[in-house]
Each structure stands twice: as C-alpha cells, then as structure tokens.
Length: 137
Image 1: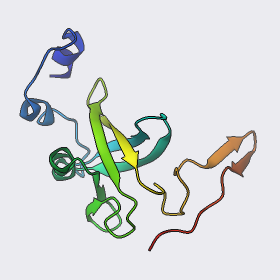
Image 2 (image 1 turned 45 degrees about the horizontal axis):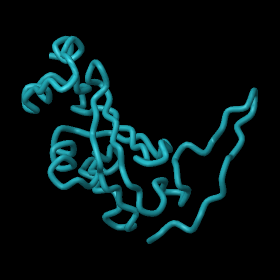
Image 3 (image 1 turned 180 degrees about the vertical axis):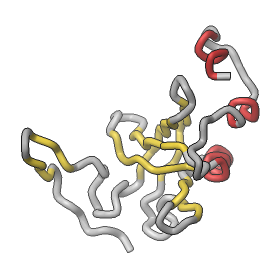
C-alpha cells in the first residue's frame, strides 16, 4: 500500500480503511504520533496512538492518544483543559509515524511548558530551555 502511495501523483485518493490496515503497528498495536503547532511549526510532543485513538482523533478533530502508563485512551486536555484541536493528520512515507498538525490550547507538556522538547543537548551537557508554567489542574 505504501509503495502505491509513494508512486501516486499528487491528488490521488485511497480508502482510509485500506491504508489503516497496512500501518505497521508495533506488537503493542501502537504507532508514534508527533504533535506540531499548525501555524508556527513548533514541535510540541510525541505520543502513541492505537487504531481506536487514531479513529477517534479523525472523527472528533481533537487529539486522542494511547497512554501506555494508564493503559487506556488519553484524550489530550480532558482534565487539564490543554486540548489539541486537530487541523490535519499525516502519515509518513512508510506509515510508521503520524504527524498531527494541531492548534494547542495551553501547554502541551505535563510540566506546564509549551513543548515537551525543552531539554537541549549541548556537547556533554543537557540545558533546560524554557521555564515551566503552572500546570493546569
């Protein structure tokens, strides 16, 4: 399927069910999902999705992930209010990663920071970039 997509011309259309059935889900039934702020290109976070989370995200246009620690669906912002309104979902060329273009409300990170990617590797040190804000309850 992904070879067909690779060779297809722009504007070609394929049935979602055919593509979903060919995603190389991990043994746990997961695929990596990167959330990116749609208008600035800021990388916000990496999470995991199973097929149910992906389908819910597509249907509701609000990010839903699979929480490995809670072993269940995690509807981003359900308790904190820091929701992700999904503008677009993309698959990479071989289907093993998703890119969610989102409008992030509040912080994406549980630390209260805008992005989860605030630790910068600088030579033999890690430098914290950005101050945490108070995390919403």
